[in-house]
Length: 263
Image (cartoon, rainbow, N blue to C red; front, side, top):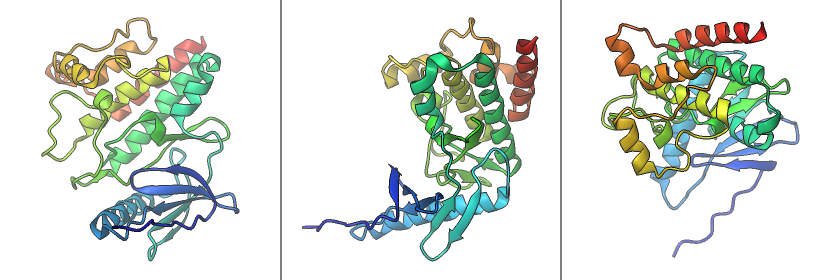
């Protein structure tokens, strides 16, 4: 029989994910530590490998307004120390404040998410897990993308895959992920930002897959950026019509919509 694994905390535990533990240190920074598992060394090595990949991507990015600031990387323990972002993750913030969030702020978040994706794609990184919980909010409610441990770098095999409502139809688990996978997820992310709900939130996952395969998506006609969301969701049709769908194009369209909504 296996004994109990005791983890000595370094600070206040903020989250315990599939790969790592997030803790708020006494210094005010956040440390991300790979989850130890002495009873399954291969699993622990997977966690460490994900942390090394995340550190490498942070190093490639450098300082950027759309990512948390990296303070320190400790190679021996595979621990990342990052700045603490006081307003938590996007999912919880929207769920707790949905009725008080202005249209301007929602559009800004959509644009900043597209900007973050532009930056990653320019480095040949496919994030693979663009859920609202993987975006953080700073003191001024600006968006920062996080959690690169499951990503694909230069066509490498990712350890993450998009969740059902963020996964484009025809997704092939045996083929390296591509930018269009992230762009489909971006459409679902913007839908959540605008509505406070996941696409087909009350529908069973297998039925959502069937609807997506049939190119049947939630009605977005009443949303100010609904046509933009559909561009992300209907990329195959867009390509046939020679319409370019990219993070940059989505960003620029949202910038235009923001300007129009200020008038």
